Image (cartoon, rainbow, N blue to C red; front, side, top):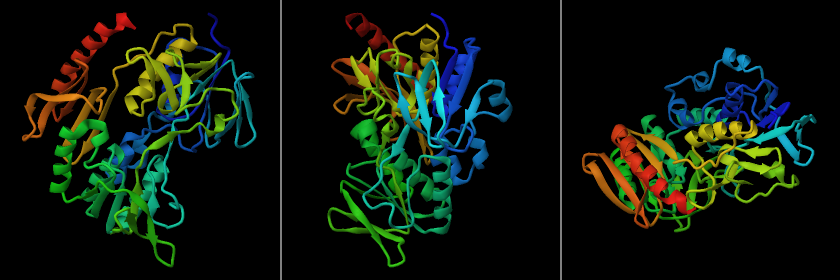
Length: 396
């Protein structure tokens, strides 16, 4: 297979940048363009809800690479100009400024956009957290405020709540589930997380839906209204209720869109078109179904796989997922998949000591491992997932 003369990467965060780096590392010498909707050079997102929001890092420290490194890629970075349309057949992208960029291969790496509450844009003091500018705006609000309500008990919401307490705010965490990260880690571990947050002063107002926001005559938020009729007082509200793939610009592209850009096992969406990172929903051979992952590790691992596919070495991409979260003095590291109906047992350490490894089984197979302040042990236990995958693969 002959390498494409021109490659266009649409999206300039971790997955897009890593695709460009992997292409050069694999010897690609053709024309390479990276298009980004934000004006910032590529930066890392995980620190936004922790180190940047807390003020432990200056914003520039979140940069993924130095200017010198970016220059060494011999790529054209077109930043601050969002993609607004794709003609997949012609492999041409139109941008907000009116540019038309054509290429022999296009990589879609536009990520996700945060969900918002109905009417969220009306009261001042209501924030989402996805971009660097979002993080800086929320940090400014936290430094000026006293009462924070976090809407959404998932990973991001739990991290924001923990950071808010570090900054000394009165923090309430609310959401429809009964414990922090219940959907991501199941009832056993989420119960331990609930105790951790409570001990650090986070008020947990969980198991109730949010129906709207309260505001004053000046247009500033004053509270969060729950379906029970209660209003949680707030002068800052952080909304972390998930995200949706950023695919609106692909509506007339001809690509298959269903909770992301649908791809085959090699992350190919159409002839010469690939997707990578949070926006990609590809056929995972181990699971036998389409999967879309929103985590930093997948963004980079998938980018390497896509670069190989573009250059003629495409292989099924079937990773064992990995993500981590830091909250107060706890670091949770998750390998694999943690199904809601999984059987969970603690295989090392003790729950009461908050230093343990939990193993998740589904249909008799190990599908996931979670380590709480036991990184080495959790990493070693990951092999049990790999062994289960190896046993299953021949039957696919």
